[in-house]
Image (cartoon, rainbow, N blue to C red; front, top):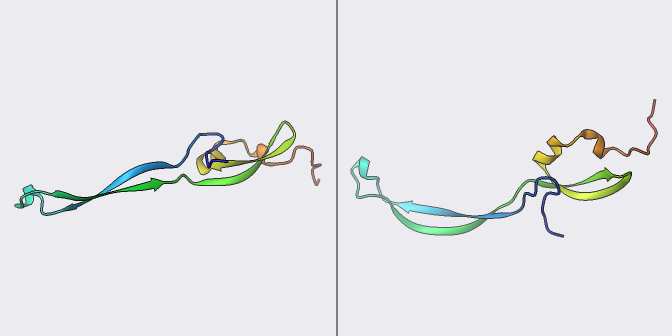
Length: 84
């Protein structure tokens, strides 16, 4: 199962970092040169949570943003009697 948020669809992305060397022209140098480009992965803050869908528990990956957006009642068992 891929690590993808079930609500927002967030997943691992790839990006690049660059290293520059030299002194900027506005500071009197000859300019910045790009000396290294490296690939990196940017991973979302995914957490495995149990939510209740149609009265049944379902374990899904959720991003932190999705956990804040969802109604808190989806994380509680609807069949469990209240303790009052």
